[in-house]
Image (cartoon, rainbow, N blue to C red):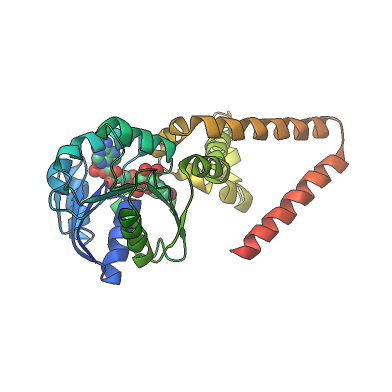
Length: 287
Ligand code: NAP
């Protein structure tokens, strides 16, 4: 049971955790912080938080658990702001989509990595943002990856684990570098491709007609291009090495497909498409 949970960034991810923990009866008071009072007021009206402050340091006072759920580019500034106000026993965790950069932000903000700091990333989300989009079931049956640092204490890790389990998630651990490589492949590259494809089509003269004829396939492929641009800008620039490595591989494979089309090599296309279908069918069966 968490006595006081402070959430900095009460949007989809922070708000959904608040809702889930309330439903589970796993939290006492929930305090929110952010930049825009109207958003925090709305979060209070919706019953997601009990009270709020525009001052992150004031919001973390008295908390036994603090979750940072702001865009990854804002993590270091928020950590600097709360550092003087964190209690000795307060556990600090985050939900950022990149882990190496958040750990580096903590190193910069705190001077050294605190024993009570446990980086994390829920593998759950939607293309919608803000507290209005938050819902209690978001984490049910979904994975949360914790990437404890060499200095994270086992007690702090256990408390963060318990929190996510109470929200319905299955908690796993991996090192931050591995996390960033896996997520570059499964999440960051697909988002980049979706934004890129829609961006290319939106520049065409006949875009009105093209979008008017867009059918299910286009919608399936590009749904995630409706995600928040600032959040995804931050993720791409904060996972640069892993994302560039994955992008290089993708570009090479795309060039091969282009060559096959130009050279009438249907066999090559069939081989690639067949392998991709088998892989996706297998993956979907497991879900
Ligand atoms: P969101 O719905 O846009 O919420 C972000 C919240 O952060 C907003 O309430 C915003 O409130 C606040 N905020 C933004 N910049 C801030 C700053 N500089 N200082 C203080 N508060 C700030 O975004 P989200 O989808 O919940 O994402 C939050 C985090 O979770 C990100 O790090 C993201 O990478 C990660 N994540 C997202 C997903 C996903 O699918 N969406 C999945 C897993 C992890 P104000 O505008 O009022 O300040």
